[in-house]
Length: 219
Image (tube, rainbow, N blue to C red; front, top):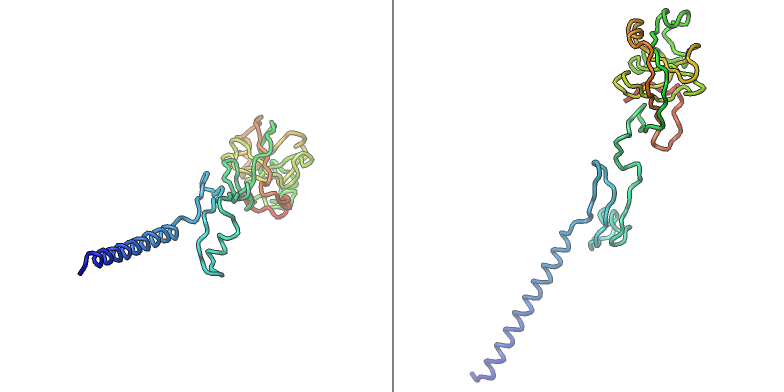
């Protein structure tokens, strides 16, 4: 075999090897693209704030993953609604999220559902026609011109500061006064008369307030 023939054979072998290596590199690149993460998710307080979309995959038409990713262009930040972000001040009342609206200094007293506090109106019902056992007997009476029935308040020292509904009113409860319901007259007397900062709450879901007749419990 001549030297020229040997050189030609070597060139052919080298060309085949280079082609094979190029195919391996291409396959590896495609494989890496296929296992790339679909999105980068940031969290604050356990709530998802935004999702950064990364280059879409070559998925067949109708694939659920393709439908979930295709609307967002590469690099766009898809923000979730503001109310999806965790807020330490948000609580729940009557099954809905609520937030503090304002604080009011009030004269706060206690009363019981018996005749010693309610006199002839001691029938186990509040003026809103709720049972005095509503919300485990944790409710308040207010001047409903200031705090309408169904309003939500929290009073330091009452029901461990949890939110309670305004479901009653009284002849002596005028202006910035609040009357806390207690199961017994003695418990009401133990509270006495205090001046405290009462927090008034509002619904945080941008929906209308509940009809006070629908209020049954707080969580």
